[in-house]
Amino acid sequence: MTNMKLTRRDFIMTAVKGAAVAALPLSAFKILSPSEAKAAIKEANVRWGFLVDTHKCVGCGFCVKACKNENEVPYDVPVTRTWVERYVVLKDGKTLIDTPHGGREGFTEQKVQEKDVDPKNIAKAFFVPKLCNQCENPPCVQVCPVGATYQTGNGVVLVDRTWCIGCGYCIMACPYGARFFHPIHKVAEKCTFCYHRITKGMKTACVDACPFGARKIGNLKDPNDPVTKIVMTERIGILKDAFGTKPQVFYLGLDDNVR
Amino acid sequence: MKSHVWRPLWVLLGVIALALVARHFVVPSDFGVGERGFMYGFHRKSNEDDWKAFKVKYLTKEYCKECHEDKYESNMASKHNLIECENCHGPAIDHPDNPAKLVIDKSRALCIRCHAKLPYPTSHRGEIKGINPDEHNPGEECSMCHDPHKPDME
Image (cartoon, rainbow over all chains, first blue to last red; front, side, top):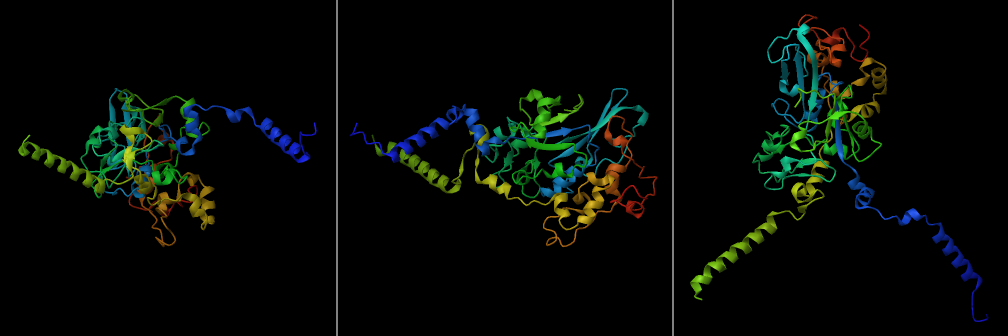
């Protein structure tokens, strides 16, 4: 017994260490699945998505105006990153569709494409804002021959203006017509979900400009995000499902006439 | 083998070496496969920062409120509280440094974006109070009679 040297100091140290190990919760040793581990890293924990409520849109076109000014898309040139379409479905089954200047000055005329419409003959009429769908499988990115357009880790499809050669393949590949040729930079141009704003904690220019809350942007990987909650719980639609592009712009109140 | 067989091979190797050297200088060092893999993520990484550095122009009501709190309050108390200041006053950008004064859009065209009556039964637009711009005091500025900050008063 005499050669077992257990001093008071050693005893206390051992007791404290033992207590610390015992106090470690079992969950600290939980083995994460790869997706859980990825979600734990904050950068990978964002997937931007967009929600359009067509019931709320009144066709004022403030979104288009704000987008053009914010993103330096020439105002008077008939190109735009986002636009608003008007659908007037008549009682005889005909559908009239127009988007004058992409709706940048709003819809102020009852005439649709220069044609008079009798209000008594309207079965339903509504506005549908459109923008890049930031697809999960973007066909525009697949076709780029030089790697100038790409998808970021948080799901936004961007164009590298210094690298784009202006071949226009991506403009042809987009089934939604969301891309165009930038008249000043002479490269492919598209909606960036206002990447400079959303990465600073702001909302996109179109979301901020919309008086009626018809547009919303959110993080689809956050279950508490208002947009995610609506996407998960309400009946939503996407455009051109059959193309397999997996759009991340979701629509409430989508009509069969809208493609 | 004779040298005339080997010579084209040396030329070919030289061309490949030249291409590799040129590639080294032309392709940016951060060019590579990003988070979304080869098919969707092949890009120059620093371009993401280029886009993040883009100038923000619309700063929203919260920014206006810092100096123009009285105007903010009067707007928020009215039916027009849904509308951003910058929708009519223009983007703030670096106001008050640049631009020192914002140009207010008082045009009829701005008001009738919402207030031109469209008889649409299934759209919220049909419920907004509206006029026929061709019949209701054509040519006049709306703000002659209606205060955009207090639209209820005439």
